Image (tube, rainbow, N blue to C red; front, side):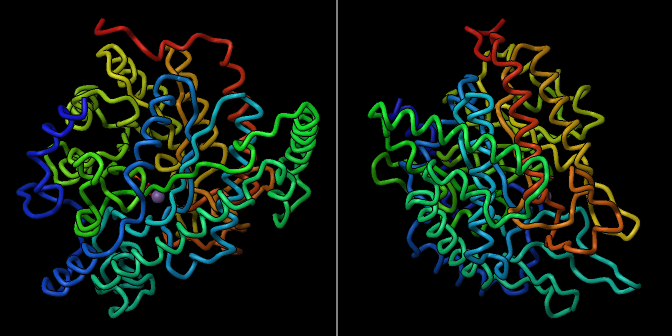
Length: 468
Ligand code: PEP
Ligand code: MN
């Protein structure tokens, strides 16, 4: 297997490492000065990796379990991280929220949960329009802190490649804290009550969480009394991910693994290719094909089964389990029509992929005041539709891909907190798309745990023996 892998990767290696490509790259910034880009890239190339190839392999193995129907992926975090919001409190609240959601899913549905943050690198955004117009003034769109500033002024919107060095440094500091939180005590299951502290309280999801935490405490005390106290209760394996959008940055962080001789993008454990850049002949898919990390691709409602099969061929020709995850983002009104043909054809081909639901990006609309928002009910409905499709086909609904924050923001409508359109301005803090707040995230986790538990007596047709 290793030598086949090496042969497979040798040819595209030079392109992956960034020396040449003839493929068109969508959504790249208009850097004003190529010489500065070259300087930044050569500095990035000298910096240490942010993650290690062995960790990427461990995640790939776990995602293999997701694809086989033996585990569930929880992937979540900001739409766009910013330098200013990468604070200890913000990072801790996101981690605590994901840990709470994971424990609700694990306890409620009794499935292992693979935890992946949209964190420590999610600083670049694709935009549907290159320009933004306000009151008759047009300026280049904000493309994430990796590229330009959020302020609507001509100076701030000029792309500055030096920002890529700050992306690297902020990602390193964030990962350092994530590792400390998840390995150094915060993630200890005996802290399950503490994860609920510091959040706005008093609603149904918090009370339910407290009740569940008491049950877990009792179970842990029982096991302790029996002499069982495994290490797995004390630490959590938590992985980083972001959209591989800025190829200058991703290529500069792609390194040859000394153990295997294979290239890994060491900017994150998992990277994904977005809906706007998943062109089969484009530079992003070429890049993803050349690295050995686990990769994901977003699939919107126009995706055809043939495109899905071609993506599998390009990105996972050796059919490694866990190498490729498909993140469907259809919208609540389309998921039941658009997803079945994709899942059915892919399953029939004999290929094993993880199927994950992003119930955020197909459900965005503009509120009357111009802010982008999403309805909690639409988010739930897309997840329900995703589960229904998999139930009908006998396949495994493998996970959730969420935009969320641990903070008490007012960006998405509804949930038991009853956020209405007039509440949006109160704490609308996202730099890009609207996120579920802490309460809404917990509520969603309880609902999804019920959906997962109710299908667990079924036999999934997640693996077929060969082409049918
Ligand atoms: C995103 O994940 O923030 C995003 C832009 O998603 P998509 O590529 O699915 O539109
Ligand atoms: Mn987004």
